[in-house]
Amino acid sequence: MAAAGERRPALVLVATPIGNLGDFPPRAVDTLRDATIVAAEDTRRTRTLLSAFGIPAAGRLLAVHAHNEREVARRVVACIEEGGTVAYVSDAGTPGVSDPGTALVQACHEAGLTVSTVPGASAVLAALAVSGFPADRFVFEGFLPRKGRARAARLGAIAADERTVVCFEAPGRVATTLADLADACGDERAVAVTRELTKLHEEVWRGTLGDAARRAKGRDARGEHVLVVGPGDVEPPAVDDSTVDAAIRAALEHGLSARDAAASVAAELRVPKRRAYEVAVARARQRRER
Image (cartoon, rainbow, N blue to C red; front, top):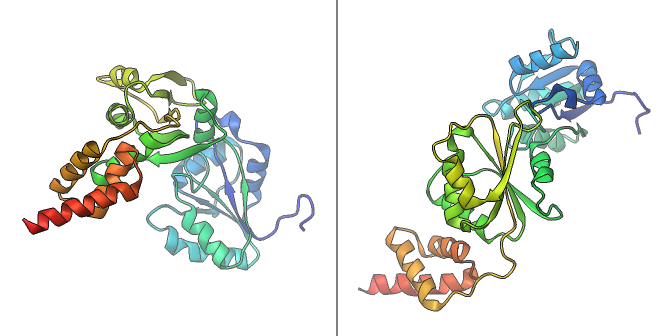
């Protein structure tokens, strides 16, 4: 084990502030100051961060973002194998959490190298804490797909989830996402809408999805948003066979396969997937025999 203060070859994931520079811990400053290479999602933003804390940047910054992560990972691995320490930062928060970093970590693990972390500010945990919803079990959904079957499936999964659900959303899409969540989960499902956490204009609003969607409609939303959806009902409502059959028929008519139709309907109506699949197969067979 390395002695206190001793630097050993490793990839170190350093969490950066999500808005307030006062949230940057001393150990993070020390790690960035002592690193052989400071890998960054955006070197311009990181240069500004380093300057704010008097950390030299010259000759040490390396751009590692979503478009070059796998390619540059080889250089990072080589640096660590030669005895160096590479600190990696994304634009805000923890690398790898809705940010690049996962491929870099995987490459280092596959090479048998040490991967460590300096934890810090987290938009996910901050929003979860201020929401007041149960946090003993929760799920992080990140950014939802923008459209199509993938979005419908994720919305259905959130509607059926008995855990608190945390989502990220860009300001221009908040109103649409809240309206879609209200449609999927019901107007009365609880939600906390948080904006600009840790910043000067931090805002936390809590109410129902229906009220949140109406409140957001037509507003000029600004800043990054984190939506925290309260847990769904523990017991799903009873769904009769005719309702399942009608939903499957509609899904098939929209071009879904029996398997996809079953998955979509099971999530939407909160019924067992096997039950939906049996109906879907029977309906698909009838359509072929016509």
